[in-house]
Length: 300
Ligand code: OGA
Ligand code: MN
Image (cartoon, rainbow, N blue to C red; front, side):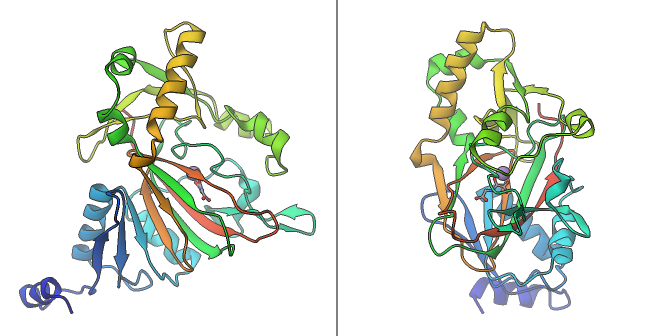
C-alpha cells in the first residue's frame, strides 16, 4: 500500500474504497490507472478520483479490466446518459449502448464497424449534443498495429499561430456525419447505405470552432477532419484553407499520445478536450473492441 493510500485508509476507515494509483503517462497527455477493479462497486471517493484524473489528463487507461458489457455500461452511466450509435447494425446484441468496433468478418458479414476512427475526430460531434467522452474496452487485439492516437485540443488552441486565432475568432463550423461517409463506403465494406430514418438522425449541425470545457473552463479547438466540413460565413476556398491549417496544427506530434493497447485495457477519453484516430492494423489480424459513448452538453 502506498503512503497516500495508507493515509486515506486512516482518514476514512469506514469508507469503501480501492487501493489504486493514477500515474501520468510520460509525454504529458494521459494517465494510467492501476489497481482499480471496475467489476467491484466504485465508492464515491474513488469515483471522484477517477473523475478528477479524467479532467486533468483527458485520457485515462484502466489496465486489466475483466468486466462484462453490463459493467462497462454501468460504469459509463455514472458520467452521464449513454448515446445510441446511428449504425444499429453494429450494436452489441442485447446492449444497444455498446458499439462494436471490429475489422472481423464472419460468414461474409462484418462483426463491427471496421473503419471507426479512420480520420481524426471527436466522437459524435455531428450531433447537437456531442459526446462528453467515450470508453473503449479491448476484446481482441492484433499482434501488430491497432494503436489509437489522441491529440490535445487545448494545447492545439493555446499554440495556434496568431493569424489562425484571428481567422476563427467567434466563428462557428458545420459538422456532418456524412463528411467522409461516401469516401469510406468506397474504401471498405463497413458502411451500409443509410436508411431515411438513419439519415434523419444525422442532420448536420453547427458548433463553435473554439469551445470552453464545461467542467474545467479551458478553451479547446473543436474541429476535425472527420466531421467538420466548413466554417460558416466564409467563402468556401478560405474556409477550406483555414480548416486544413487547423487540422494540420491540431495533430502535431508533441501534443499527441499513442495508445498501444494491452489485453483488457479500458480507455476513457474526453471528447471535449481531444480528437483521436485509429491507426489501423493488417486486415488479416483480428481486432475487436466495445465502445460506450456518453452524451455531453451544448458546446459554447
Ligand atoms: C472509436 C474510435 C479508434 C480505434 O471507437 O470511437 O475512434 O483505434 N476508435 O479503434
Ligand atoms: Mn471515435
